[in-house]
Image (cartoon, rainbow, N blue to C red):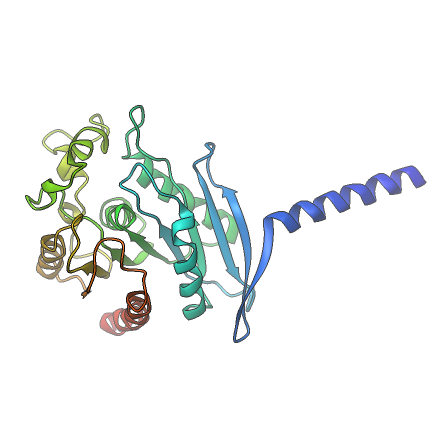
Length: 288
């Protein structure tokens, strides 16, 4: 009997230690705190992991979810690149759940699409199961992550759960002559999209261009581009704004003084967070 109790206590201790290693409480001041789970597996591969932040306050209240999607040219990068920005966003939006995700990267033996948009769907399904309800979503990403945020929201969100897109220096029209100067454009043509996926009559470039899928029911979109970005030309933002306007989609766009990687440097990051907060309030007013 005593031996059984010892075994039970040992088992409980192991479970407690395991939980302590995977779950941490983050204090952000002003009575803002989140429970954090690191490297949660939402799929079967080592790349399909995410960090999850759930507000400690009002645990029974249904909350909207920010999904943060890193950049890296579709074949590089890591969620750790967005950790600091995610924490800054959590301070401003303490009643939202945050997911900072990795996804399967494109390579010589693996296409980027549809794997990467499928991974966004897997994260959404995982969160729905974990939370016990289907949350409203805000997709936010930079560079390739901005592109994937738009592409998923405009083309693949059949349930219409994405209520807003935050596009940071993301390519919106891959056929734009200005974007064809991108030094890795040959990769975009050859390895971004699995050629078996687009329907007949749709090129791989069109399939992967978010602007091709914008309609009147597309979610509100905020965009942020650099005025001296040598990776994503300023024409991308102009094309995106034009198509959103034509389809009467609520949107806002802003420029910052800097290049492709300068968006999260001070003061550009705080300016962006201010605009995101105002944008999310304005889009609700616009719908009334």
